Image: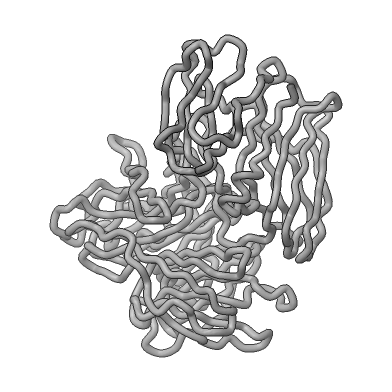
Length: 530
């Protein structure tokens, strides 16, 4: 029987987006679930004392339910990452431009250190890179960055180098290769920087010093010293901007034309660009510091933020804006998802690796199928913006990928577009595929990974599918095989050894689409109906 990965039911039910990564873990749960949120959490409940405390990354579902906690502090002589407990400007979080890594910063110091006031030569400033498999790299410790002051955030194109923000004597942004022991001062016009992001291959940052606002440093390809930053959005006297989301909603206007800015004094502010001038068009009253958001295919924007607090016990909140880019925010207020315990603070918030903040392409279907000529890849986009081409990438282990085929993209389209590519040299072993979509400016996004069974393992499917309560697994001798049913967040909702008749009960599970695994290997998608 032909082996097919075809998540059409997932797409219909979940409105799956290319590069939004709303897939599910296929081999255990030791990885982030794209579409979930990750928050930097500092403190362990002990009273704040102006010294460094434990720093963790906490994963939440979009509903605010804790999924996983990852400590960033190493022990012994290894590099460390801690943050100052009462310094809410520290511990911001970003997603690399290619969507594969989380980036955050801190101090190479044990808990209880007065790190921010120490020289960088004494207490190095640490950059952390966290992959989708929750692998933490804190090999980058800088002895020449933000000496005697705070390090606040980092950004990256692809995890190989970092743009780092903080308070410097002469430069507010610095650049360092991953694993490097030195850095280069970039910005000369603004020395006090907060959150740095790379959007469409350009480097932006926020500041509350001097003229507060969002600044453009320039193309990420320019890593030389002594660059002058340009004010993009002046947020006005009395403002104090931190996190921000820049969106490109109008193809007729070059670069970002919509912005949401987290301000600890004035709330979440919405700005619109008409091609010549940025104007503030609305705000939510909740005062926040950390901020991320995503643009949906219907034009709505979903925002997640952490509220202002210097003593912890702050909140993770959300809001949805369904109004056009040049209209006020439709939501009258934010909704609280999670409140931190006493003496625990939530700092930066970001989507998990594999999730795109800006979606240049919306996918309506995707398929990987073994044929006599090789593996045939087919995908359809519902809309495209600035797309240049697609690359089909193959892996034997789901981690290391090689490009095996490519296809030119439409560029800009609001109509459905169908694509196909053949991997004629595909081996018979179990394989993993993903799409790499490259924009005209060179930036890239990755799709969720698609598994494909080995040719020798092609098996009949479970039937009936869809079903109400019971499926029968056809796979030769199934007796004793461990059948596992997972929801689309990768959580196991049922696990049982199969009897000789191969029957598997779905009774008690809500209607929806699930992944069926046999002995830990992906088998197929099954749909339960009422």
